[in-house]
Every structure is written in C-alpha cells, then in structure tokens.
Length: 181
Image 1 (cartoon, helix red, strand yellow):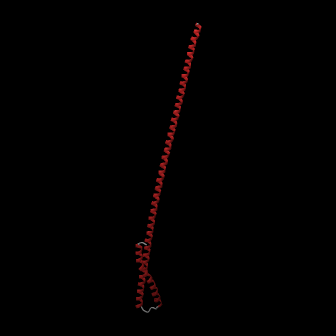
Image 2 (cartoon, rainbow, N blue to C red):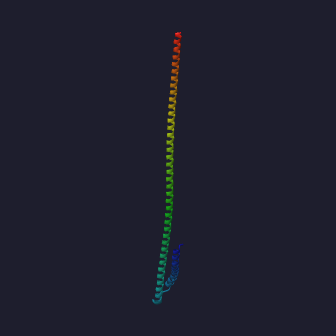
Image 3 (cartoon, rainbow, N blue to C red):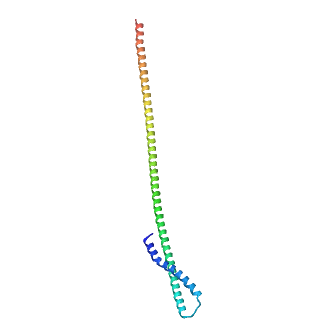
C-alpha cells in the first residue's frame, strides 16, 4: 500500500475503534435505561443527556469514519484509474512504435522491389540493344560477304572473259597464219 493510504488507515482506525466501543456501550445503557422505571427528572435526565450526547458523538464519529473510508476508497480508485491510464498509454505508444517500424520496413521493401524492377528493366534493355547490335553486325557481315562474293564472281567473270578474249585473239591469228601459209 502507498504511504498516503497507510496514513489514512491510521487516522481512521481510532475513529472505528471508538465507534465500535460506543455502539456496544450504547446498547448496554439503552437496555438498562428502558428496564428501569423513571424515578425523577434529576439524575435520570442527566444520565440520559450524557447518554444522548455520547450516542450523538459516537454517531458523528461513525459517520466521520464512513466518510474517511469513502474518501480512502475514492483515492484508491483514482490511483488504480491513473495506473490503468498510464499502462494504456504505454501500450498505445508501444503499438504506435511497432506500427511505425512495420511501415518503415514495408516502405524499404517497396523501394528495394522498385530498385530490382528498374535493374531488371535496364538489363532487359541492355540485352535487347546487344541483340540488335549483334543482328546488325551479322547483317553487315552478310552484306560484306555477299559483296565480296559478288566482287569475286565479277573478278572471275572478268578473268573468264579475258581468258576467252585471249584465246579468241590468239586463236584468230593462228587461223590467219594458217590461211597465209
């Protein structure tokens, strides 16, 4: 128990004891007062007044003790409520921190996914460009090869024509020589 609760209990304890004793004494004096006949106004009325005053004082002390208990109960309830609120706030802060961490983690994962996607797109473009360059090289090589074959064929054709013209020119004079002989 907190220190303030102990003080309140210590303060209330004497009142409770007094109220308990007063109640038991009041019960004894009421019983003896009722069974005895009223003899006179002097001593009996003084004892009745004293008894009434004691009863009133005891009732006052009892009501004060009840009030003290109620106050103590209210204080304890308020402390429990404050403790519950503090615990709820702590739980709320912890939950907010967890949510913030989760959110940051999700954001980081999203950024990494975008980065990987961008890398994949860049790699695909690079591969496409490489393939285009390779296809262009092959076309150029094919064109050059075809052009070389055409030149070679042209050269062979020209050589064949020269060889044919040379044989015709060489054969023609041989025929004229034969004719001249």
